[in-house]
Image 1 (spheres, protein in one colour):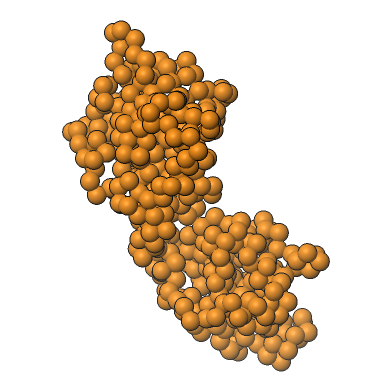
Image 2 (image 1 turned 60 degrees about the vertical axis):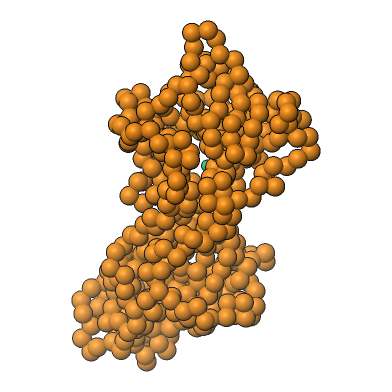
Length: 421
Ligand code: MN
């Protein structure tokens, strides 16, 4: 039984050689201007959960050596993040298709919040459910320089002026990208100004080449996205903590039922399983920690339930673990143990039931014919005095009475009481 309700995955690690990214200058506290620029970045993130940098300690900017980084980010949608240093922060754009080296191809770049310079060495995973949850790869890095610098300006002032005017011509001095590009603003907007990223014709231009398809590894660690994700998956997280959780089972109701409020359910039918749903995949296990259950065979026998579970798995953020009963036509959900990487096992039953019902409500869980294949187990409220008579009252040969304030316990529990006629 896990002891903590919430579990964070501190799974990203800083790049092994930060100096390569040009971050070797002495750290000092960020200036008030930098702090203000980063307020939106900070407000979107919980730094006790994500391993992304808060940017509280920033390097002093060098106005003549501006840094850039491009990160490949498999969040809800795969995209590339272009970041250019201006005034000590990284101005950032989400580029859905990534940069191109072909001057005939214009790439949409959506302006997003400024990031701290410390983000330039971030590669790893952002926990599911957190802002931008997913895998981050360092795809390119280096310096950039504005192509037009007025007299009396330094590079930083020139970049700042050009961006404010809506057109920056600049040159990448990266490990993967070189040569001159233009960033051109096509639509203003407080939140989401749109820009185009266009390669200028120069000796680094390569007509017809798709560089983001060609270069699939980290510029820092040479890892693929899959390797970055896998490296982090063996660090402890909520799913690992689930390993020790076995199905909660009822015990025989004592003659004198302990006082409290109860939820009465019929004795469920079907095969008791835990369903792990995460990013489009469904796994069934007989025990939360078991890896020996044949999900494919079990789901093959229940195509409607399999389809409903899969639809749900494609829509959820993070992971969900359901405790339920699988039969040929349906999956009846009795409990929920994990939602979006937050353990639910210490929540009272009634709170788990509420999150379970809203979780299922928010899904389209029916089959095409309109018959629900995935739904919460029906229950009625009762009290201790009525537990023994409830079996006869609802006309079921056997019922289970669940204390509505009970946590989820592994194995036989005094909180769940079985009454048979
Ligand atoms: Mn991103």
